[in-house]
Length: 78
Image 1: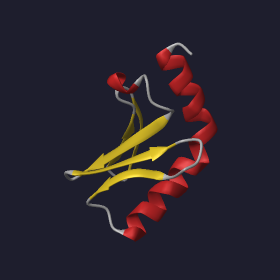
Image 2: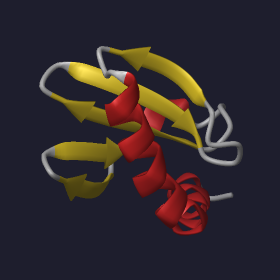
Image 3: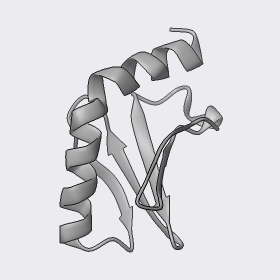
């Protein structure tokens, strides 16, 4: 499970078992979790984050989207 970034305590990472899904990132902090599709920047699942936090996290993901899609492809050998 590679951690891509730790930002203000939020951990952005991939899970190795997610190989068969489209590229996405998980964000975890304080028992909360968020899953975001990297190509569309759509929230796939949100457990506990309010709208303000989600907006901030989406902005962080958007800034790094291309880099993280490349990291996804490298990690999964695509």
